[in-house]
Image (cartoon, rainbow, N blue to C red):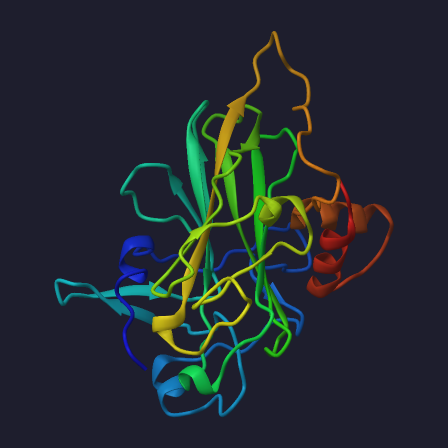
Length: 281
């Protein structure tokens, strides 16, 4: 498998381990429709462990070689949603980031078909979606989703948490027109705001935004959006005004688990995910 430098180096260097975000049931930040997919090392991938199987974001020791020849560690690809201050060169945060009033933050969703067979292992109908809750809180969870009709699992998700330093409450405002797709292919450019406004999200791809992504690093890419943190003041403590359609899903393992506890239900991490995709704002 070739090392991928143009996109990988510019977007992710920091590495963090997966952390639990829910108070019970050991719900992790990342997940999929198979209840927790297997991770693979680069050596296993290069030795053909996947066969013809198409799997996204499952390499546990991903690396990239920069233009300077230095090898950078990307860690576990299952942590594929990241955040950092807009316009900065800060390391990307994979778990949580502290936000400040009025500043914008870039949310990045990494998409990598791990099969090393290139155009002989093309993932079909690849859609991405990023859910930005409308809630006001001192800690807000943004979730990202990848779907593919011929991948196994067929759907993947991960999150990143934005929080205030002192417990102050805030809300997030999506920056209209900020959605963007970046890869080594011809498909680079703006994405529809549907990436945050619909459950289906938007198609991405390599040659075009046709939902097709061949396997291996050189075909991977990033979908990004920007959000603005707006802190509440004593004079304006109300909930933010919703400016997007009600097709936006309400995500967040904490809120889902809390609801399950109140109902006396015992559900799995997959159950939390299904509820998060179906529950409307």
